[in-house]
Length: 140
Ligand SMILES: [Mg+2]
Ligand SMILES: [Zn+2]
Image (cartoon, rainbow, N blue to C red; front, side, top):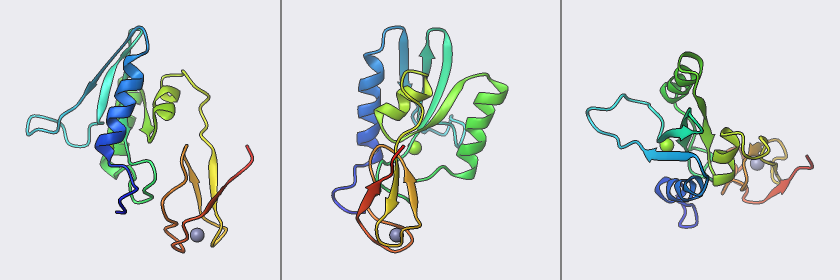
């Protein structure tokens, strides 16, 4: 990982700071312990009486993706538990999960191979296909 790529810990802190400003919202970080359920999301809380679960991934790292188990846990919270759930790489994406922002972050196209696409508020640090580091924001 390059020095410029933010750690998940840093983005978790930014997301929590943004969520704590919302009236009617309580957010907690789930600490991984032997008592916990493997694959449960990083953040949980309640917004106006509705439970939410958010898995946080690094904003510019294409290797930072949901595991199969994390996908299954999010699905369980959503389908079985009726919670608002999602993957967030930015405060904006976390707010979108709660219905507080437009749902779709921009898409970025790799200027090297022209085939790789990445959807988030920031472009990825490096294309996993061709290694290129320059991306172009696609028109919405
Ligand atoms: Mg995570
Ligand atoms: Zn590429």
